[in-house]
Image (cartoon, rainbow, N blue to C red; front, side):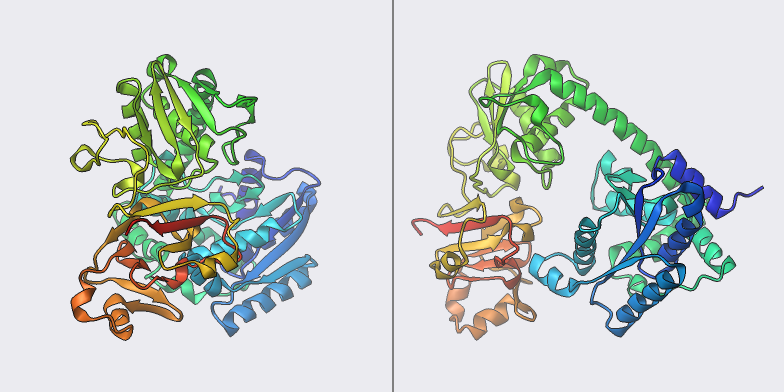
Length: 490
């Protein structure tokens, strides 16, 4: 006999230990089928599970009156059920422009910012099996390892996903059976958005190949979650065996993966590292890099491989990595040191290849001198804290510019070069072709080809000759990290 959705979800909640008796649970409700289903399911489980239920709705300011109507509908439904509702209105469009992220990502960030202020033991999200499969495919397409292929976790911190055991079809059937009305978000039909493209075009084709494709992707994600958990435990044991802090008064127990390190330098015992399985050793290195930098963003396989290559080289060599990290080979140990200064190079993340090495670098691509600059050699970039005042930024000369580091996906993508076809720059109100900008600023045609620009792909960050920077890279009151770029001897 087929289990009803309510029983299925209750069993899943209990199996994953999502909710304990007496806990305060706040369900995020957009007004769509998924979140309305979750709202009513949790309402039905109140008496049998003994938790306290509330709801939160975030209006993103994207879809005009339709978005406001969604908020009113959610309020009416919560009032009817007697469930307290916290509503918040945000400007996702403005957040997207200021952060340089996509509108979808900015809206998500704003939601989680609101969720962070909710006083509850658990925040219930309405992601389901289809969402999980789409997430796995999306992560796979843009590049990921096991962590990305495992998809969304049923329980992460205080966030829970009770509907991960259900399909979109089951959810819509439940709404139909219990006559639960729900709102339709038209942006979910826009196939220019990557996740929607996977939902509407990719998944249907996979299901045509195998009608169990959705279930198979979901099952693989669950298995990979178990594998990742095992690898994380093995990495933890190995890390404690071969890594120790080298700073005075530092404690290895102070390290937290999700937070900043209590020390800046670590030492890795190469005899122990060499004895580790080839799957575990790179994970230990990556954890070390995260430890000294206090962040995981942009620390990738290429940085880990560079450290492993250094470990196999001669003593006395060192390399410069992302976030100003430097790794040193000292006999049978590696020393990894954090730094407040980040000097960029013409190669990814400060790691040079032998075919493009600067002076002072040996044939293995290992740096023998400090100070790697963006090409050409008269430009440096330094990562600083937000102790730079807005007045100082506004008063800075054309040869020094400050940009919001959060607007850079990967700092190693920054290049200094001449103009190229397709170049554009962000201005107030949108973007403009670089060619049109130079014409408007009355730059003589004969001079344009000799000008230098700091670029990220086809997007211009800084016009060196005029001092202009792209609008979306500008420092705001919300900026946490600043990248200072300076021309020297130019």
